[in-house]
Image (cartoon, rainbow, N blue to C red):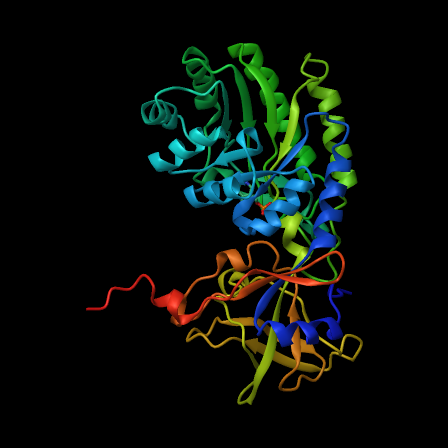
Length: 419
Ligand SMILES: *Cc1c(COP(=O)(O)O)cnc(C)c1O
């Protein structure tokens, strides 16, 4: 059973201050989770999580994570600017982009970020753009083919098709790229790969680590490059559905340690640092979308119309993703009514839930849409002229703080040219 991290009483006093809809984040949950991750990898002295800024681009969130020892993983110019302005410096910033504009590489280099190249041709492009090859450099690997763990019958199979994904170097390109980078002055090397998204399996990271550790040994032996860090990237998932088991980050850290002891240590590479670039795992469950019921409609189905829409949380409309919904104050009431919970976009897929069993919903009820803390607000858009909502932080002492105001019509019109 999924419980919100906030009570109805707390929400009632918040809605007096902040009009719905808004995204709410749980500082306590964010800190506790970051500490569990750090603990799980404490066996590796160089370990660092570079939080994927795109998941929740907000300086207040970034500062909390920085206080917990995290760096920032950026993929665009504005993410680099935000990380800089949030206090991250030099190697606390990882720049993992693709199809990268020159100005992005320039800023990344200027900030002293660690650059993670997505393609062989970016080696020359980077050199032409910034005039040199940084001494510390990373390359993204794509093994191609398909990537599978577990049996589909278990229900928690991980399957993805790196061969269809646009990211990374092939194996041959990686070997050639490392030699080329070394010849151009690089001294410290890293490798990175992202093979599957939102995985619910304690085996994903250890399996990926096994592949990357083996590759690192071969790369170092063949190219003589000094591999200093291995970046396991993102992809550790969260249980969006109440019946799904959560990942056990301690078990994941231990699984990676075993691969490290088995593969890297015997090769004399026991000083390699492990990096992660998690987004969803860090923030997903620690944020929710708070919305109010505006209308009830009965036609061929029963519709609950709320004041949030897909412009605030796109995942259900875009991927048919499940987000659990709690009707606040009715947490323990029987779920004996079937509803579609809709937003107001002129798109029939603007539904937070389809045929969802909920307690009887009344106009004015507050709904919590769970697990919107990552890839929630950040995927928002302005379709239908909808304005982006506010973001609010529930602080450790129980007080709240506005960390992004809601957009106003003036914001929406600011880029238009009327004449
Ligand atoms: C999106 C992304 C991440 C974070 O992914 P999650 O699924 O949120 O963990 C990490 N690294 C890169 C390069 C990404 O693009």
